Amino acid sequence: MSLFPELDVPPSDRLFFGIFPEPSVAEAIAGRAHDLKGRLNLSGAPLTPDRFHVTLHHIGDYAGLPRGIVAQALEAGAAVAATSAPFDVTFDKAASFNNRGNNPFVLQGGEGLADLRAFQKALGLAMAHAGLGKQVAKQFNPHVTLLYDRGLAPETAVQPVSWPVAEFVLIHSLLGQTRHIVLGRWPLKA
Image (cartoon, rainbow, N blue to C red):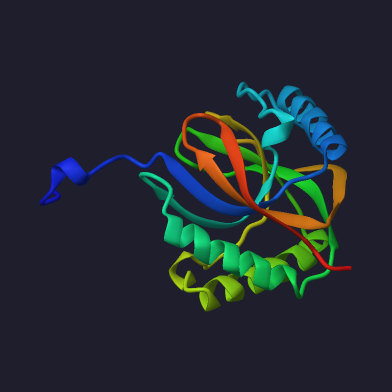
């Protein structure tokens, strides 16, 4: 119980670093989502192609946009972009995460995500150097959420989905509005 209940405002804003597939790949992912939904008897609605992404680091949920944290995240993004090269990602299986009834059904991968894991770790080090050490993800299970469902689907092999990662972004997500605002965009140096 808070000493100041009037200050207990629910979060309205989320900050995260992520990568997004190019539009043609996002459309291919949407096709896989619809196919898998039917094959596995899932009832959840697939996300729209513009929502498909991989979260690298969830920085936090806030009541309002914390300008100081945004500035630190922008600093970290610029630092890691200056030293990182483009790489490819490949997702070749799908499965559900058990989230007690609101279960994400996601694309996952194995060896095709080694460079992504290394990049996520480098970004975490840059975040720590910029003062965001507490926001660095302790574990990283790279995935692309396809839909949410009450049921759980077993791990299923899928035709691989790949794309070149040539940039990453800092996103301000308006919670409950399915809206992403790009606050920072960094191309990776070839």
